[in-house]
Image (cartoon, rainbow, N blue to C red; front, side, top):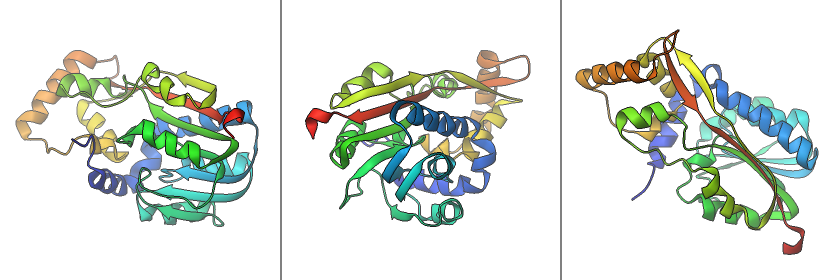
Length: 253
């Protein structure tokens, strides 16, 4: 059984593009931190860059502004990103399609991605594919989310979201020198549970579930959310960012 309906993922993200930049506070911070980690651990010079799952361009901005690059190939599942990315990197090329299905006729000095790898059906297989299209000592750098991400939704809806913990991720990196693996927990506050749902919709993450709320179901959700996750100013929503920077082992050239 598929973990995600990729058509639904694509649709929900496309609907969220006009509201994404204003609402994706954590994802924006993740892009900035990932760029800093890449710079600190692997330097700034990359002749050929592949960005996976670019969205509206949080990480793209750092790629073009913070690094010395020559060629940039941009991927996303939605062709609608082109209008956003062309304003940031007008010289780039695009490869539209599911990150797990796309194929390449060249190799890259760095493959990087922000807040997209959690949507992979088979993350280990995808990482292995990216390993094989990296140049010798190439860099794979990405962010994803850990198992505590959106834990409020998991507990209330009694639905386990398929985020991986660090212990599950580490064996996938066996062919790399691990430069950075870091995680953090951060929390956003909202006035009400309804505002939490609106936030999730506005960043396109409502693709984790396809059902529609009934009036009674929504009321029950709001009651449970307030009982379990009230704060002084409203209610909380947990994010669990994970940062990974890997370098292809020299002996595997």
